[in-house]
Structure formats: C-alpha cells, structure tokens
Length: 446
Image (cartoon, rainbow, N blue to C red; front, side, top):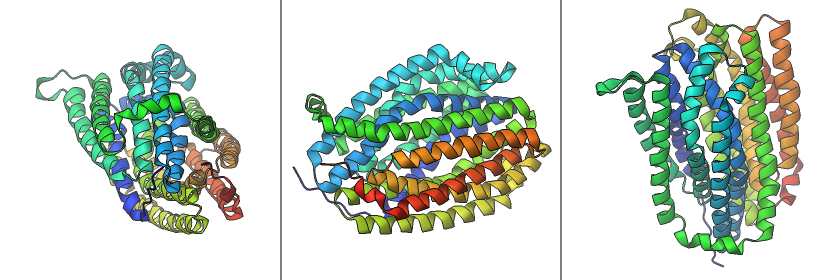
C-alpha cells in the first residue's frame, strides 16, 4: 500500500474540466449547427435522436459514477492498489454494458422513436442518424470508464486536450460529409452520423494510449481475479441510485419532449432545440465546478478531513451561482444574435428571447442543485438526493409541463418556466441535506 496524497485547488481542477466540456459537447453541437445550415427539421431530428440515445447509454453510468467516487476515496486514503482494482473492474464491466446497449439500440431504435412521438421526416432523419451512431455506444462506454478514472486521479487536463482535438476533427468531418465539400458527396444527416462515429473511434484510440501510459499499466487487468466483494457492492450501492437519477432525468425529458411534440407547434419545437444547444454552454461552468468539488470531497472524505470538504463545497457553490447567474442573464441581452446563429426565422428568434429570460431561473437553480449533489456524491451520500430528485421531476417538471401546455397559452416558454421552478425547489432541498451533515457518515472505503 503506497501513500498518494495530492493537494489541488478548485480552479486547478475545474478549468480543464470546463474547457474540456466546452470542446466535448461540440460533438453534438457541431452536428446540430451544420445541419441547421441544411434544414431546421434535420437539426431537430438529431436533437431528438440524441435524447433517445442518452437514455440507453446511461446504464454504463452505474459503473463510472461509482468508480470515480471509490477511486478518489481510495487515493485520498493512500490505498493505490485498491484504486487500481476498482479501475480494472470498471473498464471490463463498462465495455460489457456498452456492447449490450449498442445491440438493443440498433434493434429497437424505431420503436423508441415511435414512443417519443417522432413522425414523418423527423422520424426518418432521426432513424438514419441512430442506426449509424448506435455502433459507437460501446466506444462511449469504454471512454467513459477511462475518463472517470482520469478525473479521480486529477488528470483533468488530459480530457481537455482530447476534447479539443476531437472537436476540431468532428467539425472538419461534418463540413466535408454533411455539406459535401472538397468533392465529397452531400450526405446531410447520414454525414453527421458518420463524422461523429469516426471521431469517437479515433478518440478511443488516443485515450487508450494516454491512459495506459500516464494513469495505469495494462497489467491492471490481472486484478479482475482479485476483485473485492466490498468494492462490487459499493459500486452498485453508489451506481444504481446515481444511474436511476440520470435515467429518471432523461426519461422525464423524453416525456416532456413527447408532450411538446403532441401539443405545441413546429416553431416551439425548433426554438426549444436551439435553446438547448445554447444553454448547454451556460451549464458548463457549473458542471466543471461540481465535478471538481466532487473530486476534492472524495479525496477529503477518504482522508477523514470533513471540515475541509465542507469549506470546499461552500466555496464551489458561491462561485458557481455567481458566474452562472451573470452568464445566463447576459445571454438575455444577446438573444437575437445567439438564435441567429441557427436560424433567420423571426418567430423562433422572438420566442428565443423569452426562453432565455425564463432560463435565468433554470440555470441559477441548477447551479445550487448540481454543486450540492456533486458534493454529496463525493462523500458517498447518493440515495436520498436521488429520491428527492425523482419526486420533484415527475411532480413539478412533468406534471407542470403538461398543465402548462394544456391550460395556458404560454407554449414552450411556459414549459421552461416550470423547469426553473423544478430546479430551484430541488436546490433548496439539497441545501438542507448538505447542512444536515449526514453525508459525513457515508464514507465507503475500508
């Protein structure tokens, strides 16, 4: 057993995560942007396909989320060998899950899209995208496993560099394959799918080379025959509630999408699609602070330093709320040029202003909620926060959205106001959970 104690600052960990996340989401954002140059409905089809696939790929989050917490706590405690054992287990389990989910998606994607409410041209375009990108789900599972371990070791810059390279590659391939530049055939939606799949293959190769050179030896797979029962139990104790949380979120979003598809106009659907692709950039700062806070708290709880863990969570929350509030409020004043990136439809741009205004409450509530949840997960406190999230999402987000579209004339703006209420309520409840101090009793490592 070797002692491995590292001291990190919040921004030292957070800024590479922030930059890496910005570049990482370009894989999805670039597809939507380039297709918006072709057809607004094609962009919406890719967004709908992405939502469906996100539900299916959440299963391997069971292992990744739990692994990042366990590895962080073992490293904080100084037990490097147990951290490596958990790493080997994570990679093997995730690849197996990824292959299984890839098969399910490729066999049943048409049924999933029908359940979502996709019809006509939107259905056909989403289906053609999924049946190509679906082959890359196992690669997503593999990369998620390596990435979660890299984060636990504090190697946040590695993901930033990889995301940067892949974002640039995806942009080039999209421009060539979607729009048919440099003599290539114009493939539109299928071109976007092939560009994304090729990018994932190359990214997996690069990540493998980096991981087994900087983080672990390829020999760690010998630990598969030495797996501790306690680690397997801890993975499922942490992972099942975490995946249920993510799965529940994605399912509620699919239900809300179905409510929108069945009750609102095409202009509302398009405005929502573009808002989601704009707003994801606002959420990156909060996501980076939350990830860094979770990593630090995992190490600190593993070492038994609860006072420092509490101070780091408080600091992360304060920074996240301030910056997210300023960014989302500033976006309101630039709504026209932001939506103008995607479309010249004046009705979509008009709705976009009101969506961005409602989105201020969404982002501030999410900032509080996400940082506290990250802190609680880092400490191993998962089940109660998940139960709270499930209740709020179905009662407030789903129920409120249905009431909004059926009882008001606010359209998609009403749905977004409800989303803000949901995030703010959950943020207040998570604040109470953290202040109770019960997370101090949840350390998982032996």
